[in-house]
Image 1 (cartoon, protein in one colour):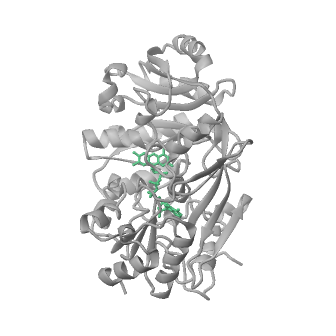
Image 2 (cartoon, helix red, strand yellow):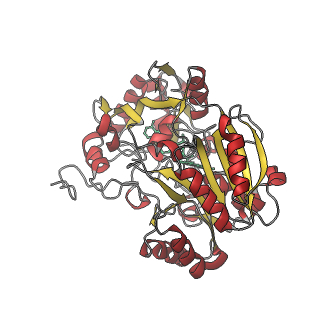
Image 3 (spheres, helix red, strand yellow):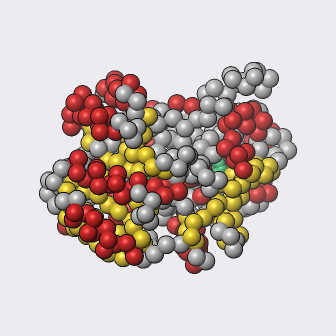
Length: 459
Ligand SMILES: Cc1cc2nc3c(=O)[nH]c(=O)nc-3n(C[C@H](O)[C@H](O)[C@H](O)COP(=O)(O)OP(=O)(O)OC[C@H]3O[C@@H](n4cnc5c(N)ncnc54)[C@H](O)[C@@H]3O)c2cc1C
């Protein structure tokens, strides 16, 4: 039963507020979409998909009330933060309710020992500012920090700026705890702490709605930004790897770009000399001069150096890193798309060479460094890819995997195939417990089976 009119009328009664039940087609369309169009494979597959109605709960009780109604009427529910996800994570495949959590944006507390306690709709940039006022900062954040929400980051993100020092979102107990609302006849609020958070993280809202979060922070650092240019990508990569892997440097961002990627960074053209391969750094302000000396010794030329005074700093170098790099390239030429790779630190040069040899400039290297769960800094990459056919893209992914390069495939629209699904099936098991009818973001966890069926690998 997805008659939008009936749904809207009923939800207005449920929320007691018609202004928080949105039905205007353009609004529903906008709030049903994310950045799925980064993928030329997902673009045609998802462009016609949308929800029927948007509901905007303001409290956990209202989330429960909406879910109770939807459970009883078999209406699908797709959670939404800011809709900056890349793989159509927040796009409803079966209509129903888009549950827009952006009004649940309270920060309850930044504790004395550095834990942010907040609601899911808080924008990461707002949380970062609140944390810094108390002497703390986010351990890691996506380059969409200004728009993206904490709940959306937990539901669909993985890491970003800060990950070179603190690992990904799912590492080192960064998510201390969360409360999740179940999709049942009488929706429950479960507190998940410690290892138990992993059943919900990166599950794309398929197995519960996160309504409260305890996020561990890092002590605040006074940061500076630097751009360094090199004549060869090999020299740029060597220097980026040296700084990223050396614990003596306090850093938040180390990103290496192969030319011509920097050509696409129009607003900062003056710091991107023609033909040069670049590294963008966020480094402790007190180390900035030392970094300049080290860069020059490594044959680099500093093209920019400045203080960082928050997200309004101009230029904000992080705006060109992580998956923003892809956005600048697509703006320039929409034949570009991307992959998400993890290289073997011992073989990375050889692996890059294999890809270059096989695909030439169909692939352009954009490297990001990330501390893994064992504390080792590893070279990751979000390489740009010139798209021709889906077959060619698959060939590239296959070639990566054959050569020991991990790929989290951004051209699929389900949790299992995206590369961050837990092999212990924790997310799937949680879905069976918390969403027995399979009404939460249906279609995004295809290995889910109806209640009563045996879960693969569960015994
Ligand atoms: C230009 C660009 C750069 C990016 N850079 C990065 C990056 O550096 N690192 C990175 O990890 N990602 C990156 N992303 C992806 C995305 O921005 C992040 O993952 C972001 O944190 C998503 O937040 P959001 O609020 O927009 O989530 P949404 O897109 O709204 O939602 C993401 C997923 O989480 C689910 N969800 C939302 N809220 C809840 C909730 N309360 N409970 C349960 N599930 C929920 C949704 O259903 C959806 O499946 C980038 C995307 C773009 C377009």
